[in-house]
Image (cartoon, rainbow, N blue to C red; front, side, top):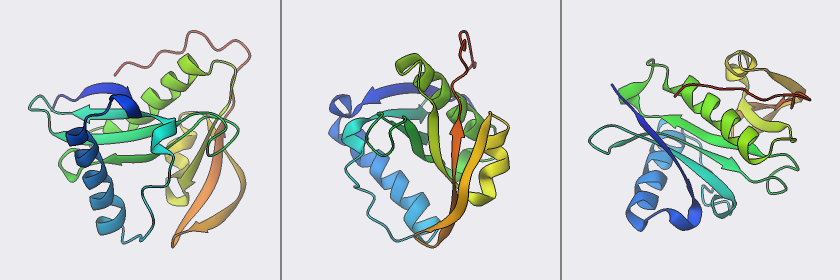
Length: 161
């Protein structure tokens, strides 16, 4: 299945796309994972949004890249998701690669921080993230802080989407 990737700022997201994004996020994080939390946390307005759509424009993958000095001093990404229809096809890896690449493009001298579900730490380690601190509970799911250190001469790092 081909996935078409695009980045948008909050102000450029249409009402229809915003509804689709929020519905997919709630379906995965609230319904599937049974995690009750306030999804409208105020960070969407201060983020880049990565949309992964099929050729028929169905939203099947998503992540947001928070600007520096919003959630953390570093840029960070989260709300990483893939719909059931594409799980196991490598879309999660492409999302992480795209987030790293976008962060390097927009914030070339800054590290990148994430709050990862602890059971996914090995997944993120394959991209160069390292654990920082101890695991913690985030709405009933164990998480760990992880950081991607900005190499002093990091260009060019290229991931193919």
